[in-house]
Amino acid sequence: MAVEHVERATNDVEALHQPLNHEELREIGHVGLDSLARMDLFIGIGVNPDTGNFDAELMPRSQDDERNRIHDRFRQGEQLSVGEAIQNGRDRIVTALGEIDLRSDAVYRGISIDDLRRYAESGLVEGASDEDEYKESDDGSLNNNAGVDWYLGGTAPRYGTIVLEVPARPDYFQPAVDNGTRLAAGGFARHFKSSGSQKPVPLALVSVLTRDAKTGEYTRKTPQQVLNESEAA
Image (cartoon, rainbow, N blue to C red; front, side):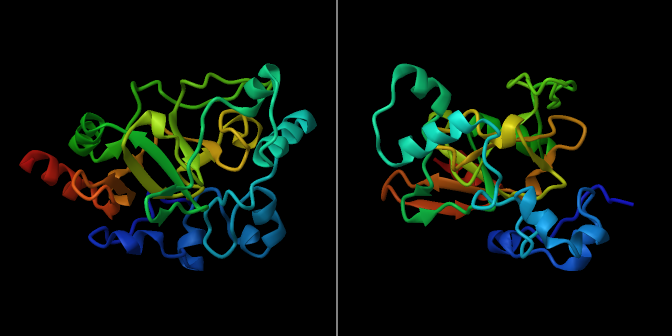
């Protein structure tokens, strides 16, 4: 039986990003003992068998060959038509913040300090309502506003200067429609979803990347450290 949470000590933010061991993997709802022996299945759905996390470098491509062609052209620096630019994806993604390279097996979410305060009140990265759950329709379409939005392998600066970072564990995250290829330009970073109310991501799993106002450098901190510094400012 899957457990609700497989959590580690959270005082050390680096410890949150260490690979899960096999005992921990067995406790994750989406990964069973049979899957542990089938590494081809792991990689086939974009999960890194060494970490147990989704990995942008292993994610399957779009099921749309034309979208894949456009992503390839964009990444090669070619000029796109207006129609191609729309299919390419609306969000420009960065894969590094200052000197910090973003992890291909972590998801990122840009927020405001007010968002972080709200999450801290409940200890959960919650959605807008009790009904905020991601669902795909039978024809593969979806409501992009449902569920909590993240990017695997990168972040879109337009959404906030405070960036949440969480290992992309299959018990909390899933790719959005078409392997998450519809929103991020270039197709490397993938649009992911987490539960808004039924099983939201615990804030205990979150590291925060913030930019120092004086030095301009990004650092990785705990949510509480960021909140404490905000109150002291």
